[in-house]
Amino acid sequence: MTEQAAEIAVPTGRTGKAFGSRLVQAKADVGPLCVGIDPHASELTAWGLSDDAGGLRDFSLRMLEAAAGRAAAVKPQSAFFERHGSAGIAVLEELLAAARELDVLVILDVKRGDIGSTAVAYADAYLRPESSLFADAVTASPYLGFGSLDPLYDAARKAGSGVFVLAYTSNPEAPQVQQAKGADGRTVTAAVLAALKELNAGTDLGSFGAVVGATATSVTEDLQINGPLLAPGLGAQGATSADLPAVFGTALPWVLPSASRSLSAVGPDTSAIGRAVQAEVTSLRKVMAPSLSG
Image (tube, rainbow, N blue to C red):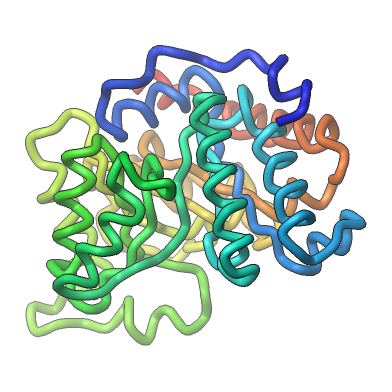
């Protein structure tokens, strides 16, 4: 890490609690924003970096430094590290360790979803504290059946981590599956949200969340799941802070908006990215301030 990272003041005392509680506290203490770390090849090039593990490392650690002390969480997209092979995975491991040192929550965007022993292996990789890829939370795909993710839920409970399950994403292909209706007349989205609400039952601040795009202006399903709602789509995808109340309604207190390319676009200067992060947080607070007390 650079000297700048060491100088950033970050909140302490969030350890030892379940992910849902830590996330609510981080949103209130630091800022209701998740900073996506998506090192596309084009992003590395735009920063004047080489498209290799060295460029990946520089990009990722600068984005983390810009987020630390300003945003509740970061969200590295695993695919952009995996494309560099073992060297890229080593950078991801370094990034996760650096985030822990800075007390920044990490939502690792892996979108894993499988059955049986394979699901257990994914849980071991990302939700076992002894793993070098351990994260505060992961994203997961429920489309092999919501129950296929049970090993992830079980591992998250043991580790105090979280799981964000895809429910209403913003890609144009999504409605074919997510808005399909079952025999009970519910959409797949509604069924996923209901199952998450059941997982969070009996808790004040659930740790099992849904991914619902900030651009999902046509969502009609009940978003009250007593758990967090990860909302990608701010900035480059077209959503703004002003759109959030209309999309999420009374579920707004649970929302964690996420932005990526609109923040990295002002790089590579870390201070400039930090100012962009702070400006986004300021805008979000104006909309979400009443909900940030938890």
